[in-house]
Length: 92
Image (cartoon, rainbow, N blue to C red; front, top):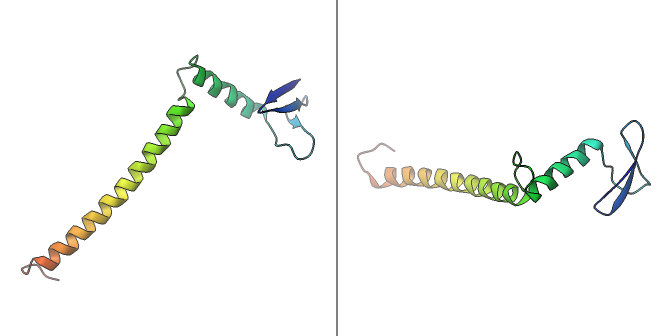
């Protein structure tokens, strides 16, 4: 059995492992199934997975969320610091 993905011809052994010439990356049956599922999701025939665009957008939003949380922590610490400096009744 052979499979063509990303321009590489892959040949499968009976054990399910790929056999390739040296220098070409390995493609397992599991990886190939994941690629097919992702292609189906991107094509709209699967609704149980995020599309590639949705997945990239989700990663960008998660990254932005982490950055905003860090900025909020910094601002909270700065406000506590300046409140202590400006309020003479608080102990230092």
